[in-house]
Image (cartoon, rainbow, N blue to C red; front, side):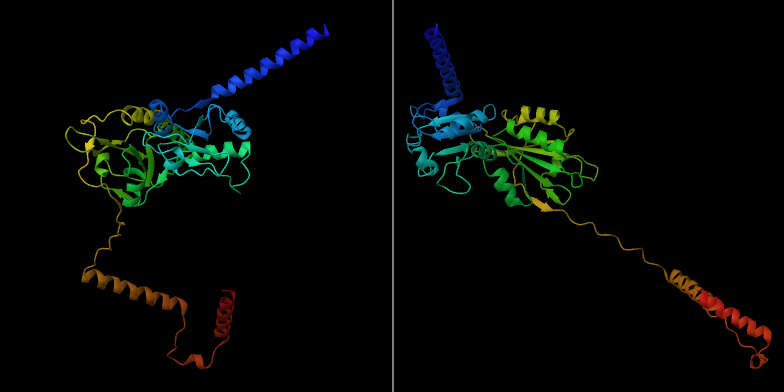
Amino acid sequence: QVIAGSLVIIVALFGWFFLQAATSTRSVHFIQLSEPADVHRVFQSGEPWLVLCSRPDAILPEVFEKATKRLEGKIHVGVVDCHDKLPSGKSVFKKFLLRDDIVPTIFTIANGGKPKQVIPLHSSRPPPSCPALAAQTLVQVQKSLHEVQSTKQLDDKCLKASTACVLIHRAGKQKFDEYQKQWLQALMHEHRLVKFVWMDASILKLSVDSLFKKPITDSSHHRLVLFKKATNRGASSQWTAKAYTSYFDQLPVQAFLNEYATAPVPSQSFRTLTKQVTVTRRAKKVQSAPPSRTPQEVAELERLRRERMEEESKEHFPQGVDEDGSDAHPTADDNDEEEEEVLDLDEL
């Protein structure tokens, strides 16, 4: 019975370890650079990935395996032999300038950008801990909403690449609240290949503001412009634009992006841009000068001013001169008045 019980325990433990290994294997994708589907999904789809440079038959580093469990459901995890060659003929190490002296060699890739190697923050010697690796991974694959304040910034952060770009035309006195920040972040993660930028519409003007049909006001809500490239037959690609002026909330904005951001551009619903899109500062409102007065009005104002000054002079200096010289021999009543007057002044 003891032997039978021991065998049951051994079999149970073996089954548990096998199940754990199988689960860990299923959560890690072994990327084959010879497969176009694998190359597209990892390097071109915009999906967030954490990738380990290693041979498929090698044992996974403990820190990587534990981080994989922490990131499950949040990011894709894969293993690739970085010495293998991409379709360009270069290895992953040479193509993306990864440092093979940092072990384990791990990189992230997301949002249509280039791979970013995960390097320990304090030193290149010790490997990162599991929590630090998971936290740094999430930071590196995060999609950001960039502010643009000039034409150059708009070109660099929005219109430089051929991917679609969403420009949020933010009403100046209405900043993004916490709820808007949350659903904007969720929409950006849904559309990883679409760039997102914003500008302060109260001080900046877009050369395609006519798309909105109505000028921006203090009571206006946030609006969008979607830029996409359309390729015509026999012609080079051109930028097109479409404005969104409906209610600024998650569901309507999500429906707008789902319909127009990733689908082919329908020529009838987008405006073709023939000139460069520019960002300029709005002219400050100059206060109008008061209307000029006529000579008659000026004379009347001067007369009223003199009358007012005379009244104030009588009120503050109520002293008079007696013509009969009675002030040379003041009476008792005069002394009382002077005393009362002095007392009144002291009280003031």
